[in-house]
Amino acid sequence: MKSQITLAILFLLFASSVYSRNATCNRAVDQYAPYNTFLTGYLNPGFDDPVTGLGFVFYSKINATTVEQIAQAPTLIWLNGGPGSSSMEGAYFENGPYRVLSENGTQVIRTNPDAWTNKYNVLYIDQPIAVGFSRAEKDSYLPHNETVVGQQFYRALLSFYTGSGCYNNPLLQQSPLFITGESYGGKYIPNIAAEIIRQNQIAAASGQLVIPLKGVSIGDPLIDPQHQLYQLGDYGVQNGLISDKTRLSLQVILNKMHTYFKANDYQKASNTYDEAISFFMKNSINHLQNVYNYKIGPYPDDFVGDHCENYIKQFGFDKSFKYDSTSGKISQSLSLDCFTPNGIPALQYLLSNNLPVIIYNGDNDILINTPGVTTFINGFSWEGQEIFSKLPMVNITNNNQTVATYKSYLNLHFATILDAGHLVPYDQPESMNIILDNFIGQTLSQQIQISQD
Ligand SMILES: *[C@@H]1O[C@H](CO)[C@@H](O)[C@H](O)[C@H]1NC(C)=O
Ligand SMILES: *[C@@H]1O[C@H](CO)[C@@H](O)[C@H](O)[C@H]1NC(C)=O
Ligand SMILES: *[C@@H]1O[C@H](CO)[C@@H](O)[C@H](O)[C@H]1NC(C)=O
Ligand SMILES: *[C@@H]1O[C@H](CO)[C@@H](O)[C@H](O)[C@H]1NC(C)=O
Ligand SMILES: *[C@@H]1O[C@H](CO)[C@@H](O)[C@H](O)[C@H]1NC(C)=O
Ligand SMILES: *[C@@H]1O[C@H](CO)[C@@H](O)[C@H](O)[C@H]1NC(C)=O
Figure 1 (tube, rainbow, N blue to C red):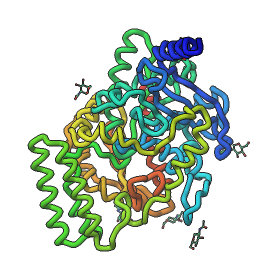
Figure 2: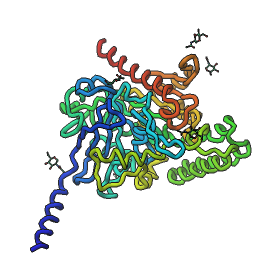
Figure 3: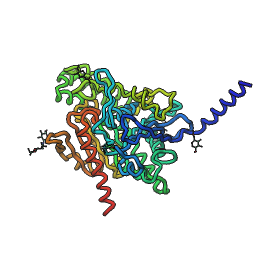
Figure 4: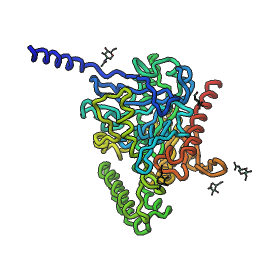
C-alpha cells in the first residue's frame, strides 16, 4: 500500500514535469537598496521542464515605485561575459545600486554613488542557461554557438514582456530598451540583438509584441578575435609592461595563432591566445597581478558570490540550488565558439538595420587592449567604414581633465576610457556614465526627431 502511494506521488511529479517553468516576477525589498523597486525571478528560454530558466534581478530607477514611474525611464539589460560569468558581477560590483567589496579580507557593502539605477531601470540576466542563478535541466540544452544563445535569450526576454513576466504591461512594454554588457558580451550582445531584430520583424508583421530595443552598448569586447588580438606585444612595450625581448617571443606565439586562424582551427587559435597572455603576465616587468587592469592588484570582488548565495538567493530563487559565479559547463560548451568569427557578421547586421551601437574600451586592459579594439572597429566593413575609420578621436573632459576619447559616425560610436581596465563601470564610473548617458540621450533624441519629421 505504502509503495503504491509512493508510486502515485512519483507519477504526479513526473507528469508535472511536462510543464515548463513559467516566467516569475517576485517583488521584494533589498535592504541595501531600499529606494529601488526590486524584482527577481526566472525567465523561460523555451524548454518543456520546470527547471530550465534564466535567473534575473531587476532594480528600478531610484525612487520609481509605480508602473508609470518605472515606465518613464529607459530599461537597460546588463550581461557579463566569460563565457560562463554571472551578470551578478555587474549588479553587485560594477554598476548596481551598491557594491559588495572585499576590504582587508572583510566583506563591506557600500552604496554606489554612480549606479546606473540613478537614471535607468537595470535588468541583470544570468545567461546562457547554467550560469549564475540560471538553470539547465539537462546538459544537452547548453548552447554551443551564438545562434542558439540568441534564440534562447530572445524566448526568455519575450517571457519577461508577456504572460507572468514583470513587463507584461502596455506602459512597461514601451520603456526604451538597451542591451549593455562587456567582454564576451562582444559575442553575445550583437547576436542576441540580431535575433531580436529578426523576431521583431516577424512579430510586427503579425501584430505581435515588438521588443522596444533601441541600442546596444559593449565594453572591452571580444568580438573580432581574428583581428583584435595582435597588438598585445606593442601594447605591452608602449606601456612599459614588458621588454622588447619578451615582445619578440610573444610575436612568435601570435604568429602561431595566426596560422591556426588561417586553417580555421578556432580551438587551437583560442588556446594559443591563452598561451600568449600567460607568457605576457609571467614575463611582465613588474610581475603584474591583474590581466584586466595593469595598474591595480586583483579586483576586490571576492564576496559577490557569497552575497548572492547567502542573501539574494532567498528572494525567489530555487533553494536547493547552489549559486556559482562562474559556470564551467558553459565555458566548456562555448569553448569552440570563443574564436569562431560570428561577432562581426552580427554587428554588421545591427548597423545595416540602423540600430545604434557603442563600443568602449578601458585603456589599462591587457586582455582586450585598446589598440586591438581600435584596429577591429576601424577595420570591419560596413556602410560608414570609410568615413568612420578616418575620423580622429576627440577628447572628452570632466572637470577640465581628459577622461575619455570619442568618435561616432551614423550609428556607430566608439570611446576609450582613460585609466580604466576591463571593468570600466567599476574602474571609472563617472567617465563611464558620461559616455553612456551621452549615447542613450543621443539615441533617444534622434528617435524623437525622426518621428517628428
Ligand atoms: C505555467 O502556466 C500554465 C498556464 O497558466 C500552467 O498551465 C502551468 O501549470 C504552469 N507551469 C508551472 C510549472 O507552473
Ligand atoms: C529617494 O527617496 C528618498 C526617500 O524619500 C529620499 O531621501 C532620496 O533623496 C530620494 N533620492 C532621489 C535620488 O531622488
Ligand atoms: C585596510 O588596511 C589598510 C592598511 O592596514 C588601512 O589603511 C585601511 O584603512 C584598511 N581599510 C579598511 C576598510 O579597514
Ligand atoms: C548551432 O548549433 C545548433 C544546435 O547544435 C545547430 O543546429 C546549428 O547548425 C549551429 N549553428 C551554427 C551557425 O553553427
Ligand atoms: C577649466 O579651465 C578653464 C580655462 O583654464 C577655467 O576658466 C575654468 O575655471 C576651469 N573649470 C574647472 C571646473 O576647473
Ligand atoms: C587630449 O587630451 C590629452 C590628454 O590630456 C592631451 O595631451 C591632448 O593634447 C588633448 N588633445 C586635444 C586635441 O586637445
